[in-house]
Length: 93
Image 1 (cartoon, one colour):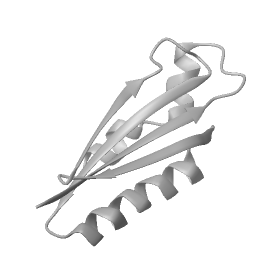
Image 2 (spheres, one colour; image 1 turned 135 degrees about the horizontal axis):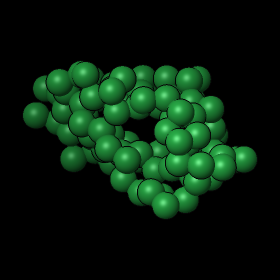
Image 3 (cartoon, one colour; image 1 turned 180 degrees about the horizontal axis):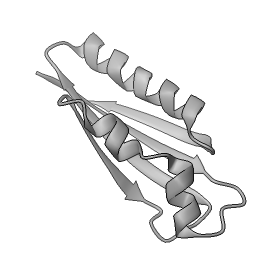
Image 4 (cartoon, one colour; image 1 turned 45 degrees about the horizontal axis):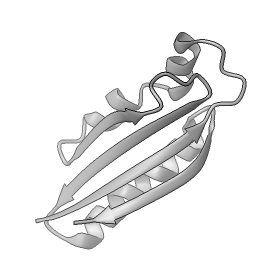
């Protein structure tokens, strides 16, 4: 069993309220949490309006599958979130 952790730091310039922050993040938990091989949570920057931190944990039988899954998540977020990914870190366990 292989596991990977992807942590994304996202900038949300001009965000003025927690409601706007939730709308701009576009339901990441619901979208990616449906996959039984992925766990997702907002892991930081809870009190900052102009930033958000999300962590995704992926599990698979093979390391390349985990890498592909994390890459797919990162690509989808960069295309769909009304913000800018400032930093992405990956850790394979």
